[in-house]
Length: 385
Image (cartoon, rainbow, N blue to C red; front, side):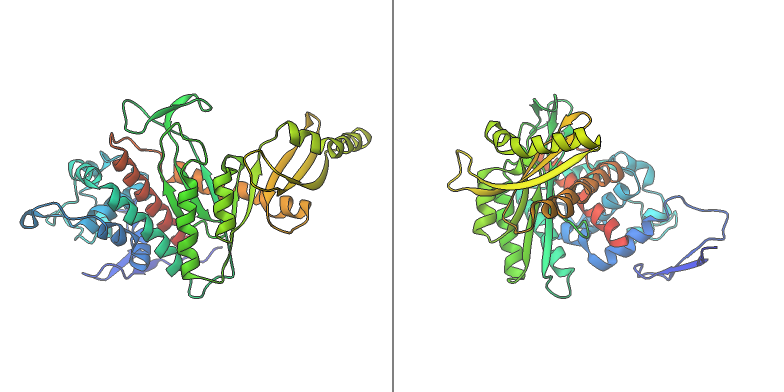
């Protein structure tokens, strides 16, 4: 039988000793929020976000501090209460009150209502959200007691359907819907969400990413001059400007590349060998090769790893741009394909676990702020994990 502690003591709550006991009949289904508050007491991401917001309210009429408002919204996301409307039913909840450092008794102040939360979301400015994004990078750097030798960064985007006349909403032909197109950059090993940027719905997958990466690489290299950084991404990010940023910043990369007529000719011999192998064995056949390839918009050729795969359904060629000196099969099988779990899994957790796609404000900046709150909630969950 798994050993269990009947009592758990938490030390984030300053007013009184806090002990969780698994013995009373009157239990709360949201007691896990206290663990999130314990994590916040370690990394202070809610406090960091609140510090970026300029107080606009009359100081003589304040009931809730900015850190308490941010923490309340983040804890609600962690608890599965993604709508601001949920604040009205949770403002009396003793567990959420303790997490936000209120006394868990009816006579104490209640938490913020939906109106107060909505005013907060719509008060935040673009400059303030930019400052919040910097806080995540600083928090990531501070999480290492010693400079790492290597970090792998995964980048990916996802479609977020919009409704009505929301700022920045646009129709995307590939997805066939009006949407936003957020992009996430996370560290592969820990899943730490470094950047969560909201973009217009009709953006190219790689739009505005070069500028984000240039700033991110500069910040990481300034903190850790000797670190080796590797960027991993799918074919949507194989834009010339992204490749140039990586190369000029001294960043290694493995980025998918879409097939075209030239590449089909280059892989044709290897793909034919894979087809013949499949015909002999009736088993999936995979062969690898590499070439140096220069697209029309490039200044010089770059190394392109080719996977020639033949399946019962037919040919399945794949291409990866890289400056890494691994063998073609090693690069593809042991490094590049890990991107699927390391980059797509955090997005799935953000969307399904934190409901980060609930961006229902009218203002684009307010929705960017919501996305940052979801990023903070996800970071607290990673800290707990």
